[in-house]
Length: 563
Image (cartoon, rainbow, N blue to C red):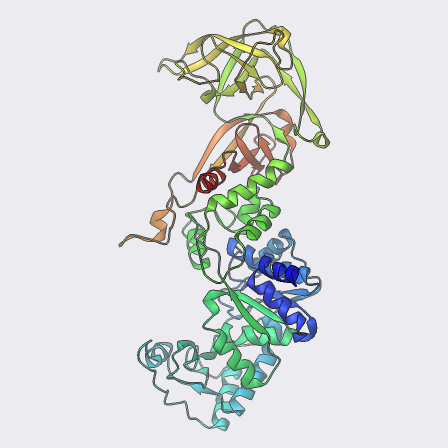
């Protein structure tokens, strides 16, 4: 019993509820979930939480999970979104097998359900406009008032509803509403709209329909039709649950269980599909897959591994009350996975030339360097070395501060896996900036080890100027510099809060073999960060997106909190 209690405490409230349902044989001990996106935009990090939850629970309890598109609004939906959603779900490991469904599959059955509601006196055709319906609905403190059309006969309502379907009326001229309670304290229950007229072509049904069911009517019935046991949704739908229950009970059909969980809120990030569309439409970003976006396709392009998102979702857990998660936790999860699963290469992002004056002008070396120092299974690669190299400009100081363990006049450092070098003098540009650094090397220090045991603290990465190839690095910061981009000053919009320094492109030099990496592969540039080869790459100029830096600020903050 003690072990059972401990197991219950270790799971979230949704899993605990499913365990209790299975123990009581509710739903016959079966677990059947679904991931039901609307195909009116690209999936984002908030959807990742739902994907991991719904598909994860189905797997844990030997159940099933459907992929269903709640495609009830033809004016905002597109096949492009459908295809992108399927790609994103697959990327995160969601496997719906042959259970790919669409609400549009059920349009005829939903229509028949609506007629049944009319016959049972629970729905009516209303002539009020959308503005009038809002006006009649009342307020949180005042009850609504009934429409003059509310008491039409069953026969008249059926006739009007069938004529709506036949296309006799214009958009907005009539709607079908549920007949519930205009004085309900839950505004959702004040005769919500079930069907509206919309003469628009649907991406799946074409022009077969000119009336379309509303989402809140379609969603619970689709769950019912599919035999879903546990309908998991975010807390903004908690007020809708009463209406969902009403619909299912009014029709006396199979009744899934709805449970709400807190949606994901992330610092520096907007997870509103409406606002993300604005970012794309205003060209504030370069499309849905701009690596600064929180969309799953953007994260994939940036080089974020799906395993990191699974880890992130597991760490934030499932709760009932909403909270804001630090974006640094997501980056921590990226680094945790990438550190163990990516090969190391060398690239110089802000290059300055180094000439080793005592190295033969026509000489060259080749060093065998591990692709991952802690795991030989990664293998190694051959790296060339010659008289002229590039190092990071920030790795040199003319007047170094104390405890500066990199290169400076008269100072010796280690070139990673190569030689020890000492700066002898520097060539300057007219503006006083460093043009070229001159060094000498110790031929006896091959491999970067000192032959006499002298201590050399600084180790620099480098690339061979003779064989390195030019490339571009795209460096990303938060799209919104402020913690809460929804907290907008008066007179401003969230678009005014976009960080002007969120994107920078710079010319770099990389090891030659990096140019042949496949698009989408993420690697670590030693001492610089994790980078993913971008689809904009060409043979002449590879392009790399920075996935994240090596610096882990979140772990440092958490460590300080624990003290």
